Image (cartoon, rainbow, N blue to C red; front, side, top):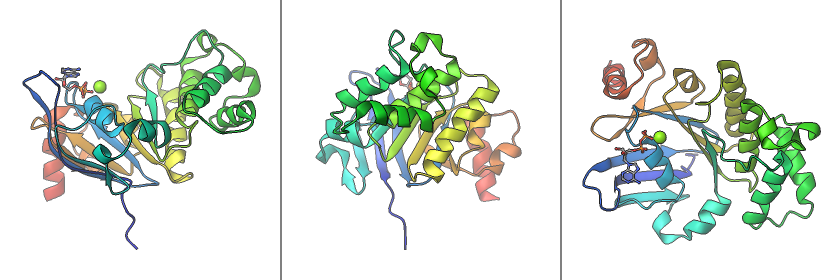
Length: 251
Ligand SMILES: Nc1ncnc2c1ncn2[C@@H]1O[C@H](COP(=O)(O)OP(=O)(O)O)[C@@H](O)[C@H]1O
Ligand SMILES: [Mg+2]
């Protein structure tokens, strides 16, 4: 049986309001449950813009983004954001003067969670990402970067979304900590069946992906093969990636 895509992008084009420049042009892509995707491309390529469209924060200028087969333009996007999507940020975006557990409970309250024992549920979420009770009771500003990102992931999971999107989630972390965070994100796909989409320009991040996509200078999305990176060592940015890719795909 063919697995239906959780998200399908069809001919998506995007231009910021009032801007002349097109940011994304005719983007087609399919994202499935249980898989980790990375999207690479140089700074300004449109990666964050693409994530914001997937997150339902922006609406494509033309084309369609289908969630389980239905165009996002035809569903309640507030509802979609509150229930179906979890977002992880590079700079964590947590309330730094509140504790980890308070951050999670706040998020549960905002998303209108019906969980009966929110505190117990929040502890369980934090434990899942490796935050013990003692750490959960500390203010965010007293946590390490790695711990903060774990809390960030727990918050993204608080409403049990189908899709987790992460914009440079390891950008502020050292290599070992980044690897731990990636392990958590990967397990969300491979063990919990979520669709995980990570935007990055870090080569280490792409190694965990089931599929790697790239945005090129023509503002389009390309599917890359893993080995595309092996044959082009050290060249992770923009058109270079795509040039490698195209030769890899054609070979
Ligand atoms: N709010 C905005 N209004 C107008 N242009 C924007 C806005 N946000 C981003 N852009 C432009 O869109 C392009 C893509 O940006 P972005 O998606 O942030 O790229 P990336 O995440 O790949 O670095 C850039 O040229 C950027 O300047
Ligand atoms: Mg960005």
